Image 1 (spheres, rainbow, N blue to C red):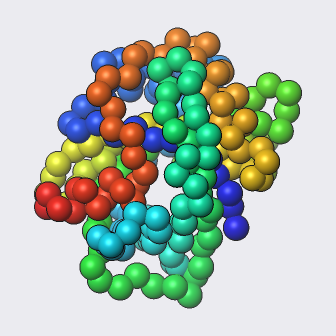
Image 2 (tube, rainbow, N blue to C red; image 1 turned 90 degrees about the vertical axis):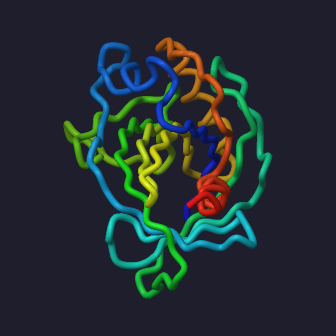
Length: 210
């Protein structure tokens, strides 16, 4: 089981001005961004609730199960990164399979990963497959920061930016805040009209439009 503290924003059509360039270029950061590849994720549709997510990630076997523990685990107020922090838990089970109805979402994701087990969060260089470079290893305490372009089945385009701090229930909130502070010092652009939402809540809203 993985425990995570999360906060996420969504924008229809385009991200805030300057966000993609700031996040993806190495100029403002200590290393280049990882990822950039495309994949297809399939989610189970359940319009009765937004607290449980079942997903098949990029055609991999098994199902990722994600459950909401607390809607307001904490509050983030660091520069443009402001809003309630949610607490989630996640499991992956190979024998599980998704049944209909589902929704398939095309994603192109760029990722920055931080090790938070050290005094100051340390960014880990990643390759295009989001694997650590230069003999770095994946941390057990850390935080993922992602920018993702999303294409829905009706061809609508959305963008999402999110923090996902992972580790223990005692560490994740402070680790998320520490990484947000690191990124604020790298002078991000302003966030404009972002929709604060989890993936399950956002998917339920979009399913009504398709």
